[in-house]
Length: 237
Image (cartoon, rainbow, N blue to C red; front, top):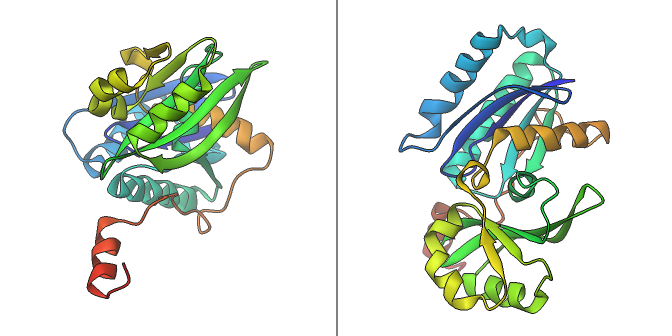
């Protein structure tokens, strides 16, 4: 199986091409540029470097959310466009689950955190057991105080590993609130990676978890600022 994987759900832009258990190419950038400027040029570059025949692609995988509204829309539109052009399905991978997959077979509770603004973070809780990743708490938007309280309550015997851009935004507060052992993932695995999206997507594909390009839609979890402002004007909020 060969697939293209895309993640533009946060500050990081990442694309990868995988074939079976081999990561053929990947390109990740986290530096002050919009995803609309980076995703397709990055994909074009790695495709050219490996001499990719696009007609050999079986599916397009995308980090489906949650995350930045703009980033998710760009990633979704890119995945849809590629899948429609190639006439292949889209594999929707939850953003936070893919981030947890960065830490393969890690011991302890895995806690990816994305800054959701408005004093909240997008978060999920995961654990590895017998080489499979299990979801303890599905993706949600919570306050950092609620998250810290839950981690303290669970008090995992092997500690909690935290990763994601939410760590940079809330590290001081996390250190103050967490009373149980906790650790921070190192730089090479602490942000979104399209390679992890692709690796999970291969598992999803084998179990029939994919949709057509027309059916694909991002997972926002919350309403956008524009929607909230419109509802306030209309007196619905």
